[in-house]
Length: 265
Ligand SMILES: Cc1cc2nc3c(=O)[nH]c(=O)nc-3n(C[C@H](O)[C@H](O)[C@H](O)COP(=O)(O)OP(=O)(O)OC[C@H]3O[C@@H](n4cnc5c(N)ncnc54)[C@H](O)[C@@H]3O)c2cc1C
Image (cartoon, rainbow, N blue to C red; front, side):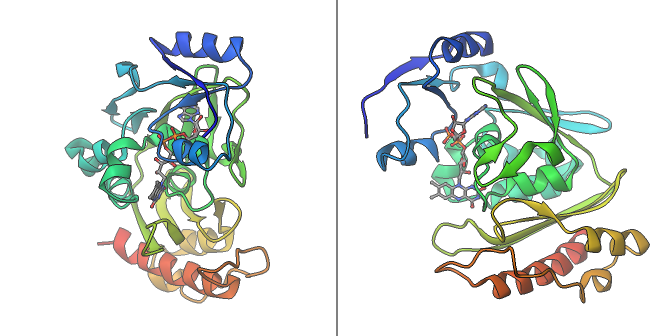
């Protein structure tokens, strides 16, 4: 680990000022990805600006049409929220299956979305639910937010403050996980939303993506058999020590079918 300054932010404005004053400073969320990167010397920020002391960023607000989650809300809090379990049970389920207890107690919704790990679960929920990412500057549609491997639409010094998820008619997430890390080898989030059916895939490629053929088939009939025969080409999918691309392609169809079945229960 390289030496760095540490600063507790008093407010979002305070954190934004600290980032503006130092181009090499980074915000610290729950530290579950960033601290590991520091230990491995993959990141060398001059300073960490800790958002952990900003209580205003930890909340879950369930409205009539949407759920808004503060950026510093932990996965454990999202998983345990009775209101969220009623409004969007698929999102609570997803959060409850992230990593292990320590990761869920420390890791945050905003940190996961900002990090955009190609196997992270929240990006699939964001695209699947047509979410909006809210920052200190603007609102960004999920379809425009996730740009590729660990890359997002966030500009330097921009901080996620909340994420807003419209409440779908029904939704479900199915993850085929790596048994060691619990990250998705393939995760598929399926939802029937006011914008039509959505199928968002994580873990399989360099970033989260939607399967439009499946969405069109589900628009004709929201049923497992609608997606059961739809194959996703393996060409652009990941091959690594955990799984080959053609295996991941196969898993997308299997997980999508299971997710539709679960959403209909
Ligand atoms: C063993 C292990 C298993 C895991 N398993 C899973 C899993 O199954 N599924 C899954 O999805 N994830 C998994 N994770 C990742 C975990 O969900 C992390 O919580 C998440 O990736 C990062 O969130 P964080 O709050 O810890 O962010 P940090 O690690 O603090 O930050 C990550 C990055 O986001 C930036 N950042 C943080 N907060 C904000 C903000 N509000 N605005 C702008 N930028 C911000 C930081 O500067 C940094 O670049 C796992 C992690 C570990 C260590």
